[in-house]
Length: 195
Image 1 (spheres, helix red, strand yellow):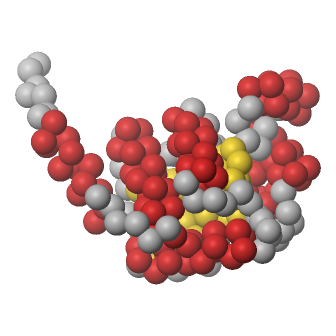
Image 2: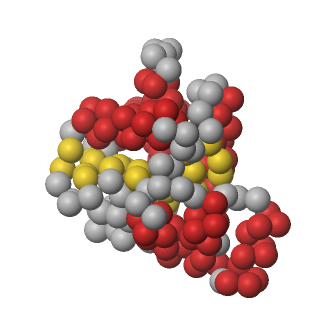
């Protein structure tokens, strides 16, 4: 079996084409245009920052890397309080004591406030610890933005106030699109152009 490997140009074209396939929904599951979902997300983030709140990013694996990266960028470049709950000691402590399903929800219950915004990132949209964190955030009336991929019927897709979905089953494609969406939110807040 011989397959012709994709060229870098084909690969980047496929990634770029995903931008036309991104869907967004509100908490009622109603479809939103990508520009409207982006605008609403920006409003939630700006309001949190102006009201003394912070942006909390969470994710597992590659999504944790995106969460950490964006918490730094929102803080350093955006001047907005932002954190990521991925400290190794906290994760191992909470996993040992409460189980991995509570690794993000417990810090939200302990440290988050209603004027914060949670950005929950999960390629599959099926991670129980992410779902539990979103529920913990809603229990204290936080606003939530979700980014998911894979199956459009995933668990995360209707859990946020604003929900972005990347229709791909390839981790790399979903993750790079999630990272791009997060960078776009920050750049648009700061009034920057893409290039």
